[in-house]
Length: 508
Image (cartoon, rainbow, N blue to C red):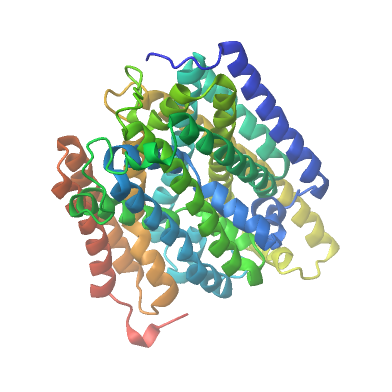
């Protein structure tokens, strides 16, 4: 890959080192004093997260690689229509939790994960195990995408080898995530969101000014082809909008990161946290789209380096228009967004592992429940409870390492697949998530949902829908891609409806 050497390798290593040291120091200063050594403390921050911390954490965790790179790419390639169909479903996906979050907290007040709720709700181990695949896969892809995008970005701008850039990111996140679990993620999310906004406020207006003003932006509203000035352009709505809407909404609902925050935020603060989180998120892709519109303006002359993925068009725009100092600010902003989702991904995977994979005896389950409910323990129970907490935190950290190593390996492999880019990774894991989105929502609202209907609906969606979707992308046929997405939703819904629970054994 040709490099946009805006920074030297030495400057790149220094930037990564200083950024990582700052995040680790922030975590130790704000989170270490909490000394979260219990399972509840480590995985859900004591269920006491305030609304403003919850909102910034939700927004920062949702501002991941696609929000940074695919949003600009869509503005560049598909103009106003592209950025509309990217941003609007993203906001809706988070706003849905103003209904889902209070609902699950009312039904499972001391929960940790969505698959845990499914096991409790349907009383089925096979459905529970089936659910673990998309939920673990989503976190694996979340880690993979952040490492892939972050490593590619740093390599493009500094010449640092991809493997070294990804390794520095991975180790940094593991170090500060080990400190106090979810609390570490939420504290760093707050700082990272502030850095994201600072980066946008400084870099985007600066780039617009350097390009000649707002007229240079509006000249690119139609995208690089100039034909997409209508935000409701039917061709974009069909080929990109439908798949994106299904994928984003499915992705949010099938992402343990947001269920983990649902169980961590104070009950009374769930709605304001998700409302403000959605609004705060929306600011970012809308502001960054200006870089895509500038790149689409042929008179500016923004050109991607040979071999660079088109999702890096925003980086190329900043590099073309602004000095190295501005690029350093922009890189800090991008790294903040990538790190915020990277640490959220490893924390979500650890909560799934500790809650849904690690085995507990009936006695141990009873003690853990008493601890969650803050009930009085006997001295013997307290001693065993401390042992369980120590074991749980150990397993949580072990899971963080395992998911990070796995994501690192997949990101490295993806780099060597010709024609394989960030957009493909994003679509694949969102499509896997779509297989379980309908049963998940029904589990909270429909009393007659049965384990049988969920099992067969999800299984067929996996076995038939995913191959159809992949094939549609290989042949690059929007009809196949959209058809596969709609098939996945339809078949998972149909089996739930066709095989309802018998009315005389209704529960919940």
